[in-house]
Image 1 (cartoon, rainbow over the protein chains, first blue to last red):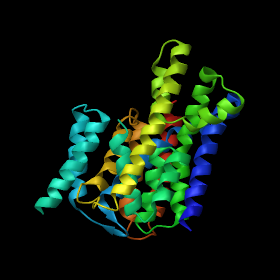
Image 2 (image 1 turned 45 degrees about the vertical axis):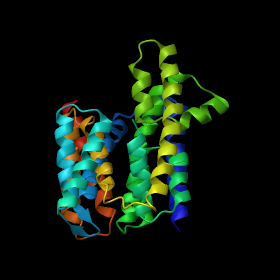
Image 3 (image 1 turned 90 degrees about the vertical axis):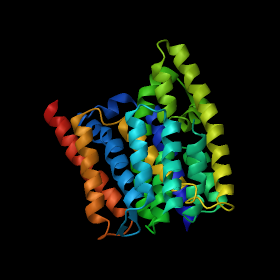
Length: 100
Length: 205
């Protein structure tokens, strides 16, 4: 069954990209549609950050991931490059887990 | 720079219950990290494939917008368009539009696309194979995806509307997680965030 979702996701993601390249820009001129699409990344990244940091199944949990995310936030505030932000998050999470 | 992100995706995907080939297929065929993480994150948490796929596809919508932006620059038709489409993602768009001259922008797109495609897939294989040997949690690899989402989010919250959309989505996830099947809170939060953000944008414009 996982293959079905893998393939649906793959096909859908590819077709979205292809549609963007192929569509006539006039078709997207609806300002209402543009406003909705503009809000997709902040809304979904905002929700996913929480979902992948403080949830485990249907439970809200506080564990080492939250420390890693806090460290990543500090790295971002210090304008660290993307890769360093990820390394900091992994390292702090691993360290807190090792200690705990 | 995608190396660790790709290793993390491979490891997290296998830890979420996908096998090596399913993981490799996603990186080769979907080739858009945010959507891939959304799908395996929701599947790994016990959520339904439908919710995971829906979240992945909604996140992938932004690549469609990048395509609209890149189309006049790339000027691709036929088979070249079919190849170029796969490489329309955050990083290639950022590199291509950063160039002043169209020719340099096209070069930036193709070079960045090819480099990232190779790096992303190779690092996915390393992570997916490695997850069988090491424990991703012990290395903190499960924190890489949320950190990546936070980094991507930080580039997206330049307006009040975007900040409110993100906060709304995060709040909905917190409130609904204990109540609804895994994955559904992310979807509903995303839709609620989009709705309030779009409304604020309309008011401000």
